[in-house]
Image 1 (cartoon, rainbow over the protein chains, first blue to last red):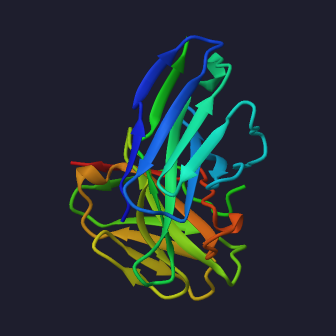
Image 2 (cartoon, rainbow over the protein chains, first blue to last red):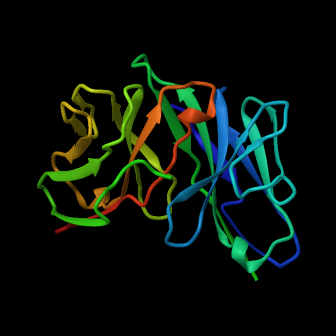
Length: 118
Length: 114
């Protein structure tokens, strides 16, 4: 299994500013992802963080608002730019690995970053 | 959009088996059934997955119907710590492509009561 660490665990930010969230995995993983979970809602995939190239964004999410980096196999950052109160959510990092021989894929998640925009 | 349908909530008595149903009537032949859960204020946690055979691990059992259009996650002896939102997800087995991405529905909020 993979252990995922996210920093910060929570933050309160002023509108118009940006927050960068860091995600560190303790082992090399094939793919990394960023999700958003709005209050009381399920998880929504923002993008796939690709190593050494631009992230692949899901519909409704754009690079200018959510720039993502992945400089190596174990680290990624998500920046939420030009913050507004609507960006108040939990942001989660996820990583995918090959499982232990059943031909499946397991995805592991960080504990999330709770962002409040005031 | 999520390809599964789950009841929004369920209750279960502590020590009893919790049976969580999931409908996935449009599942394709190359799609697996995955279950995750999310305990309050934590990230989702992998529970189990299967293709067509029933599966069991240290956490739970997964029963998939013969036509694969529905499945049931069984927690054999639910404890208070099993209170969480349980997500049933169908996905292809694709290591490198977006088709294998996890798409979360609303899940079932399981409340285990003393």
